[in-house]
Amino acid sequence: MKVVLIEDCKGIGKKGDIVEIKSGYAVNFLIPRKIAAVASDNVLAQAKKTAKQEEEQSLVAADEVIKIAQSVKNKVFQIKAKASSGGRLFGSVDKDEVLQVIMKKMKIADNSSISLDIVLSQPLRELGKYPLELVISCPTKTSTTDIVVNLIGE
Image 1 (cartoon, one colour):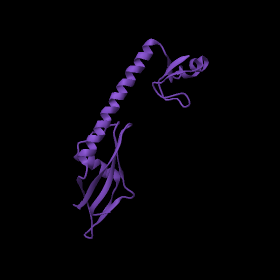
Image 2 (cartoon, one colour):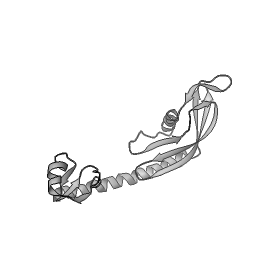
Image 3 (tube, one colour):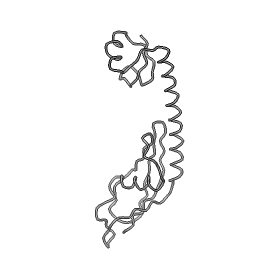
């Protein structure tokens, strides 16, 4: 029996795949759990349309990853933090705070298809400039770029 997978199914295929499986498995397990649908003409047409839309979205997301990487490359982001007279912070600045500043200053929407991450082994605890690596990714493209974070006292 031919079915179109609605969800990823371990050992069978990925979402949108058209697979040939035993009819008992399809009727008794996959179809009732809405993991698959019988491969009729309408369902096949819908699956092709959905696959095409997902491909277009992934291309747009990949282009956006490249644009973001080029716009933040070698930029300096300033973060104000309370510090002692010796330059030691009261607390620390972790990667989530740095990512929030980058997203705010570059006006990057919190998009579910694009994720940002910073390679930071431990939180920043002193004033100064820190060169960091920013990883921008989507399901089909990943880009890394260098940025500089400048911690200044309030």
